[in-house]
Image 1 (cartoon, rainbow, N blue to C red):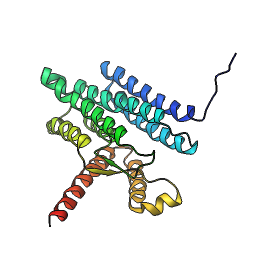
Image 2: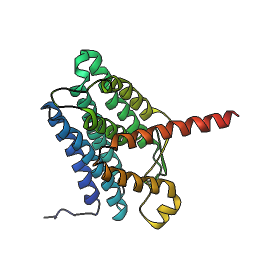
Image 3: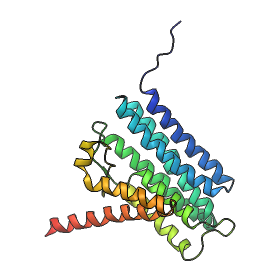
Image 4: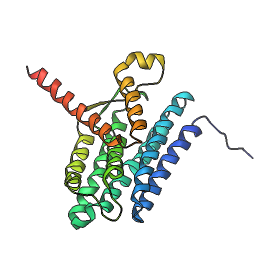
Length: 239
């Protein structure tokens, strides 16, 4: 009888599975109106998503199977889960229109992941074309954590920003706007992207000082920085 062979790839794939499981739990909690827990589970899923890539590099076990599995789990945790969360917390009141608008986060995220997979050359990348789907999901989760009041929903004027936020995030995911990857926490990685490393460190300090309340604003800054840089370079080429 052949014993099952354990390979190094089981380690990153385990983190990928935990990512997917957190997305599933988020949907369950959102359906039960445990919206704060649902939002936190999306953020926890993003931590597992970052760890699976890190583990794949450490164990030198990156593979096409891992890439596909990662994309499937991302669609659950960062496409379906935030779309359902924002529908349950706010967009449900618009009936069919609310269903369509909230679904854009999942649909655009699906196209974003499919485009990434077919364009992937190698397993390390220096930048993303379009807003990464985890960034979109964390922005939605952070918005819920910052502004949703249990029993009262989103107070004015924050509720007025939800539909524009969903539409902008959905567009950015399928756009060609460039967003940088996180720097590798190595000497070479810091030298290659000193500004990005400094931003990560400063963001971590701000999150600690504000007990995580600044998370939404940090991701808004990342999103806007990508947009303004894209516009700046586009204008420079015209001139």
